Length: 370
Image (cartoon, rainbow, N blue to C red; front, side, top):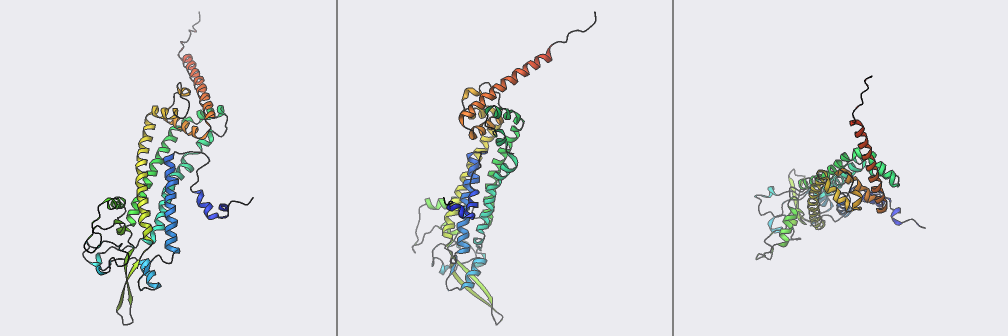
């Protein structure tokens, strides 16, 4: 049988490995939103913007400009558009009504760096997962269930028990690290986009939901915030030394068609980061509650397994967290047997400790000679 087409494309095959889960589940759905869903969203934008910027020869088109002018304007950025030229090409330009002079116009030269920005964001989204899987998790779950025999799994559960509190804490730390990486991505994106990204989504949504007013010239009186961050109509000035020793200055009106995609994509990215940040804050509160309140962890575990198996077991929050991980990775019938074995071993250990404590408290008989 012919091999699958995907195996014939090693580049795509290697990329898909980043989104595949592990053989065993060692995290939770919120964790997977960060290292799988977020990386997919970022990778989609990264590939699309990279292809547009570097493989599309029409990334920037300048009226009356040659290849040199296009390359210069693309590399060095764009700035002030004279009022009589605004809106002549696409109508989507940076609002310059509040600037004092043309020299104060912001220079937008960050389009070239967007693929590199998203590459860093991709790495940030993957970093906590890599730390957890390669350094902190330590193959704990794999070592416990390496033998599918319920009695062996139960014994392994007790053997690794001293590490569970630290294991649970490390997992909570990585969940916090996920939230921090989202915050770091937003800060770096906002810095590259000249401080316009932090409130970008809110401003765009307010603009979409607001009532639009049209002036006498037929133009909207409210400026589109998408055009503030990613204008499609820009101006470019080129200064070249002339043979007379003076400076030749040329002005071009250019179109950045790629920004039509950038406008929508970074709105989706802003909304995604906001949503996952809110979920992550709730997840951290939930994790702290599970660490501090063992009964909460017990009740959550009881939803996965038969409740009567846990009635006589003294379990900490970390114990319940590990058992919850085991319940995800082994069949329900085997998990039920594991809990039964854990219950038996707990009772035997309790009886042994009781007898040992009883022997230690018995009074010593007098050995004084008659």
